[in-house]
Length: 271
Ligand code: KIV
Picture 1 (cartoon, rainbow, N blue to C red):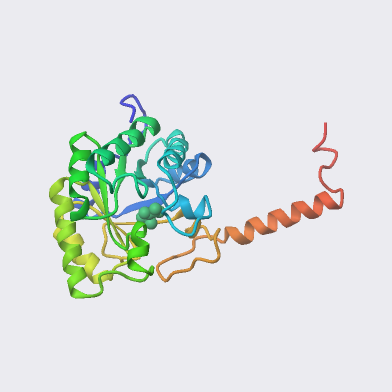
Picture 2: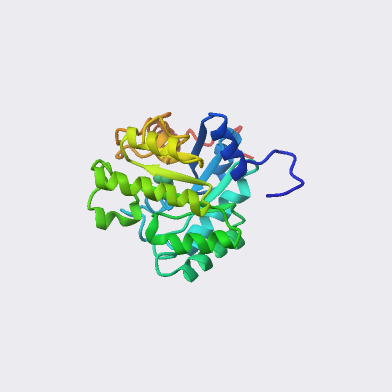
């Protein structure tokens, strides 16, 4: 974050301030330079370089295969594009669960090699030591509770989490713990709206929901999903703001037709 920048950058304090004023926080993912430029220019507050890159950029079925080096590559591209938003990067599966020393090393690599502003980790009590260690190095941490896709093989499905009292209680105590440890915000993924509202009201750091109802302090969507690039993913929580699948297929087929028919390039398009 350049102190000489003319544009007022979004910081973790900005997000807290928005919560305290009751103003909503808009967040999206991005993984590459061109998309991040568009998202940032639109006035988004937070850009997450999510490990969903594993799905939407690399075509993997889960978020598990993406590596720390690959996340750093995506984060570098995004950071080069962003002038205003806070850039948060996911610590990928396997880069922090082993022990807190490894977690700190991974977080430091992301911050040093990409220039991002914060990291996100999935989990609560079980990764407490790692969070403490990363925070003590001065690296802002965003939490992630509810459906945590890195644990998909433990859950077995991508269905709504914490519907039962026991899991809801655990989620509430983990949200409190993340707040006490010093996380600056927490993602709540795919949990009942009522529970997300209760958590939001009970902690003083912003909650950012995805499939967690309107009661969260902010919302996040995967940019490819909200743009309608991927037609095969349509969970109930997803609102499509464009049909880029249709727009792009039309453009590509029109181009192919023009090339085949010798209509492209025309004289004006030639030297
Ligand atoms: O990786 C990701 O895109 C995420 C969001 C769904 C919150 O973690």
